[in-house]
Image 1 (spheres, rainbow, N blue to C red):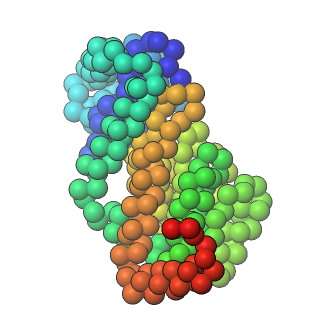
Image 2 (cartoon, rainbow, N blue to C red):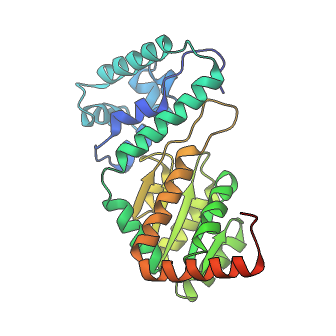
Length: 281
């Protein structure tokens, strides 16, 4: 939610980590800076270490891994981003929220220049019969949206949007039925149950494709393929424009991985829809 103060755009902080291989400890620090982007520009290395629950030398090594001389240089860069953000705040908060979504989509567009991760994800998910799709809390609508369309080309899509022991039951059932991979949506505030489920799925031998908000999200600890798409955080509740677009890109990759079956199933659906007069147009 925007309260009138200058806010460092999350996507600009994420740019600092782009293309850098981070250790798990460094990912924790990066995630902390993303979550506290504006405040971090005025925190000491010791204060960042306390927030991220790591050692102060780890913060220094993290800054150097990003190409800075040390943490003070990284902090100066965060302040520069803060000042730039202040200069750009002539629009009202609603316009800024929508503009931020345009920027998130632009980042996703650039990311898709490398098609290999998407192609690999499509092949993994297309081959899994059944195909479990995990999405809890805020991610549940995205999982349902993806699954609605995926069911038109994949013979057995199973949405897992309930937590607790039932989620584990359904994961085990999918594995017993032959599932080899799953698609997970993990969005802030990162439900613990989703991460527990991903850990169980990984232990059971399932390959995991994760659509998440950041390359340093907790999904990276479990997923074989991480597909990031930034979440808009300028309003009271998050905007999921880019993750929804990415979900449809992944579905396209699934279709591309099994073109003959996709065509056959789509033609069968259209024939059934025409016979039942499902649609007006």
